Image (cartoon, rainbow, N blue to C red; front, side):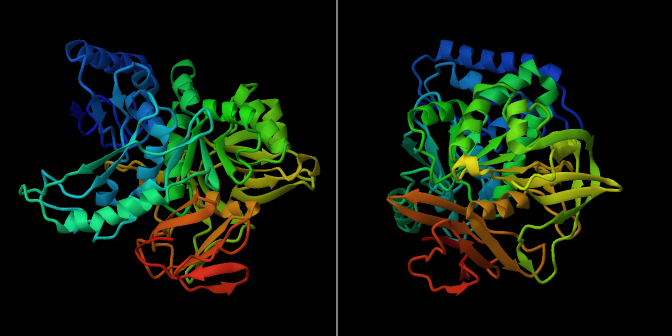
Length: 507
């Protein structure tokens, strides 16, 4: 048995948003092939010398797409090498930097496809190197980093909900080699409770992760490397702003599951990139909507085919970037000092410029929700479409601005929310079109938004949340109605159940 720690075996830089391919200013995609060869050579050489060791891996602090685009980490190649390895678990760094969106997005992106059916959940109780015990200090004895990642599940190619098969703790002893009983005594009940309440069905939102597409585009169409980088960062920032995502399935598995079980996602909204023109995925998603399914599409549509453009009623025009005014008819969070109505869209970090417009604006089945304006130019960046012939099917599109940039630190830095609107908020706001509405009341844009997962388990909904600031108020609506959380009092207002919740909570 061997543990590959801190990104070992997964590129040259395990902790940063930059690497061998991306320097924070440009993508050197011509280096991808050689980097892939070097990484593959390490794995094959290690296996030649140590054929019998089981390998467990820490992986990086980021995600599948970001790692591929910034550092040439070809997870498809590593997984396919038959190395008898366990894939990387959830990163422990959210305990340090509070970036639970990156932890959850990275975790889901790496489990969308696997070497086999095994994967692990890891929890950060003590640190053997640096003098701290995260359960006691960084987490403050709050269990959010147990309930949030343990609400996550993957769906395999046969439509089974698959949970972690392994449990790791970092570590049993503290920095001084001591084994304080307090920590396992307090942590263990939460681990057990989270496992009892683990998902048994697809969540309200299911991320259709483009595992195959990203690994194909990187080498066959390197101009799309910035788009690969962008997608996971957008989802990261959306989760950090309350987008309640907990289930993942790969694009390849989705097609097999829908073919075998057409109604399997009847209680879910699929969350997907724009598929490749004339691809099997495009056909699957179009038919899914036309047969009554619900789909939320994000990202650029530069390579969309005619069938998908028609589904969305979308036309591409000249791309724009820079500063925009943003205007929306969507209901937003209630703030004493409102969010700004300006947004910055940087093509480098957002998969290109903004080029999307509703093609036929006079069509009554299309409802424009959000626009961005630059001088006399206007771009439509969020809308929803629903036809009577779709039998209840609906599709929403959000172009998606990654409201963060590289400033020299380890991770991309979010834009100042008091000066610029946070683009990924639109992913949460548009959910109201599918009957799922989560709104937050807070004083001003600087107050951090909560992180939320909603899992479906044993015919019920299980909510898990983390509130960086407990002064916020939460408002919920689900398709069946206003959720009543067991053990908590609520006020029903305007169709919402309204709560004030603690730092970490699970109901």
